[in-house]
Length: 112
Image (cartoon, rainbow, N blue to C red):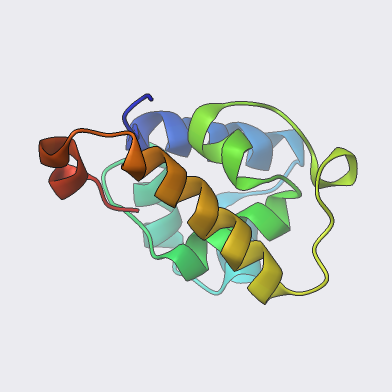
């Protein structure tokens, strides 16, 4: 299983944001985070909480796999969530499956 690459994830977030024609400021406001933080996320210099990650997925209209691994599958074509708790569970399961396959030393270095 591939290792999480924050720079790649950030680049995907930037790409989706730009495709929507949004500024960093607009996405930051929609997600309830600072402009500085969204810039750091897009550059891959800072990790984010699961809550922030879920909000980014929702606002960008994509799923966790698309942002983490690059499999482009919009929510309309994938799983529809009844509420944000259901989306959190899906994200947690995806991350848990990945971590289960990683060697222990990589697990200790991996954070979302």
